[in-house]
Image 1: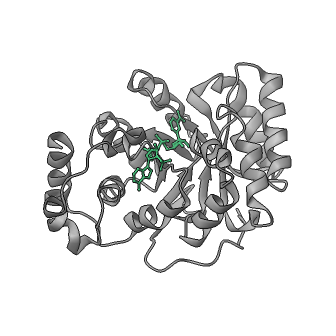
Image 2 (image 1 turned 180 degrees about the vertical axis):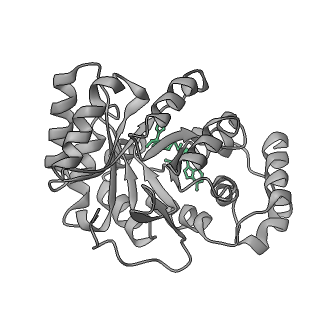
Length: 281
Ligand SMILES: NC(=O)c1ccc[n+]([C@@H]2O[C@H](COP(=O)([O-])OP(=O)(O)OC[C@H]3O[C@@H](n4cnc5c(N)ncnc54)[C@H](OP(=O)(O)O)[C@@H]3O)[C@@H](O)[C@H]2O)c1
């Protein structure tokens, strides 16, 4: 499948990984829009935020009809730069008709095509999946995915993964939430599915207190200068993961967060060290 090619400029250092069984390469740090894009807009900074993401090499931007006005805000903030990003949107509704309408609105907002369309929280996935497959056949959608935030739904997520009908999953993974290590990441690896991480900073909870500069010093040889970078690199150092969706409302944080997506990657010792820091700070 030919996906758009204008997303060509790679920012130095930021690694690219393949989604959809090798069909598209994307930089490993992405941008989430849940609550943070509206916060940026409230400060009149949504165009600056999207511009700063693109300048930092961040190309995957994740959104959803669940995120208030994030989808149209993103569309507006792209402002001629649609071809430089990979849009990961979602359907989120129990209604078949509303699912079709959500896809149609997304296609209009994002220039006639959504690069990845995900079934948000598995809502009515049996209904939406054939609709998305049809949209993919018509060239309106690139890849198809499914998301869930709750370990209580990982059994159902595994069922959807095993249908062989989706290309990606989106799940939470950070030092405080490692449930995906049990079955979801091994299964995704076996099936060759792309894995997008939500909540790499634990929705900001893990940022409430940062380790001291001395505590972060052993991670400096890995290009880590801040706690946010340590947490982002912790998730991406698992090779079964492809994209880490950090979310911020602050344009000035995008270069910092993007730097968590450059090699060298942590080995088992550094990952264990970050776990200890997260548990004790
Ligand atoms: N499908 C689902 O069920 C689902 C559920 C949850 C999330 N998601 C997706 O995953 C994305 C990421 O999840 P998340 O929103 O929980 O993101 P997160 O990256 O884990 O946490 C975001 C929080 O961290 C703060 N932050 C970001 N960079 C920082 C930095 N360098 N230093 C200090 N604080 C920083 C942000 O505040 P500031 O704005 O002040 O920077 C924000 O409060 C969402 O936006 C959404 O797209 C999907």
